[in-house]
Structures are given as structure tokens and as C-alpha cells.
Length: 140
Image (cartoon, rainbow, N blue to C red):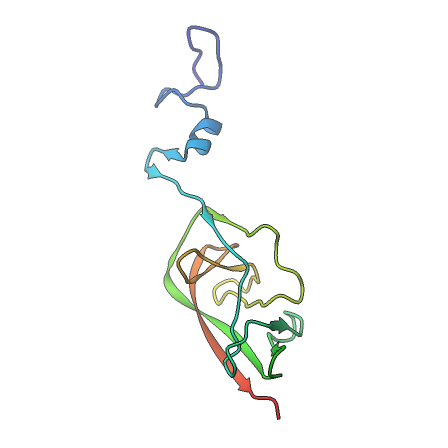
């Protein structure tokens, strides 16, 4: 750390900003750092396209989801999209236990969120993900 003429400590030689100021301004040596604000995962029923979809199990069992409109069940899975992101910000508020969820194919975390403009991202490992719907069973 370097002392400035007025006695301030914590400033760095490159740019004269403290680490906190660099983070706040998102200025880094290698370029700009951007926070990716995410949203809760939202799934449409593959049978009736309703957004009234609920997670009906636990991650240590399966990822069975049920449509509140037509009663169909299905299981979402993720596919690695060959890229990673940094600066992932979890949605606020965080998803509740019955909200749609899916596991990251790379790290098994259920901290998978929707990105602005589409696509999914893992909040734990930063993997960019695609969604696939499996095990579709229309209500009888």
C-alpha cells in the first residue's frame, strides 16, 4: 500500500483507487468486471405451457416438477454450454423450496438461475447452462 500526500492509506499505485473503489467501479487490470444479476428459474409446462409449475421432490431424490394447471409431471436437466461466467449475483429474494429448480450438470448445485436475455447460469461454479426437459408425463 502506498501513502498519499494527504495521509490516506490503502490506495494503490495503479489508478489511485482502493480495492473497494475498484470493485464498486468494476475496474480491474484485465478490463471491466460486470455483475450478472439473475432471476429465479421459471419453467413452462411442456404439455400446456402454463407457468404454474412447482418442484415436488427433494434434490437428493429427483427433480420432479408438477404443473398446477394440467397436472403433468416432468424433470428438467441441464447441459453445459461450453462457457463460464463470473460475477454471478443470486436473485433477491432467493427461490423457495417449492419453486422450480434444477441441478448444475458440472457441480450438482441447485443454485441455478435465469440470466437476463435467456439462458441459465450456476451460481456456484459459474457454468453457463442450457435446459432440457425429460420424463414428461401428461396427467391421465
